[in-house]
Length: 252
Ligand SMILES: Nc1ncnc2c1ncn2[C@@H]1O[C@H](COP(=O)(O)OP(=O)(O)OP(=O)(O)O)[C@@H](O)[C@H]1O
Ligand SMILES: [Mg+2]
Image (cartoon, rainbow, N blue to C red; front, side, top):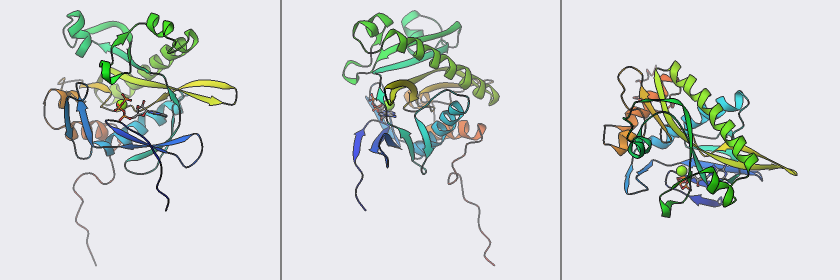
């Protein structure tokens, strides 16, 4: 069998060339990093959970007409996606103050925001993904005004969908980050939600206890990351088939 071509290896995923032109395969690794990769660990099973959870969110979005790169899951760690040209921005939507917003503006974590706030960071690890404004984005040509209108619209639709899904699972969607890609259909280009949507890229708090069910568990050493992600998967009815202790089988 021919070896498939690796396109890119990032901190959390590996991208391979897909089986057909215009497709890629995303392989979800168990590696966890935080603070621009200054903190690193291998969390067994994280990749499997994120592959499943990202499938769940992306296919849900496809189902309500929010275009994403997701085509289908291939196995426990891999999914087939449309290949896109990633816009070099992290698009962040916040509903509740936390993390860098709390630090920057001195707003206590947990304070509900008067309305969802969309922020942008320029994707550049060497610079530590600095926050930028629409002015920078337009001036440096990272996205056009039309793209920006589409990006805000996509981000807010993702927020509505994810908030609702989480609410049903007793989870508060504090904030999340998405990446947007361009796909070309002949002479036309359109924008789709790309990369991943998982507890690595969201802040999720238990509605009752406020317990963290996201990557902050790793960032802030709050306990087992696998347990937190497994809990999210369980509440959403997305359990990886091979996880959990296997039951003894009776052999006749
Ligand atoms: N459909 C897609 N087509 C092309 N590239 C994609 C697609 N979806 C995600 N990507 C890119 O694939 C990479 C996924 O790897 P990973 O998340 O591990 O990267 P990373 O270490 O976080 O680095 P980066 O700073 O580039 O996001 C990211 O660079 C992401 O932008
Ligand atoms: Mg990434």
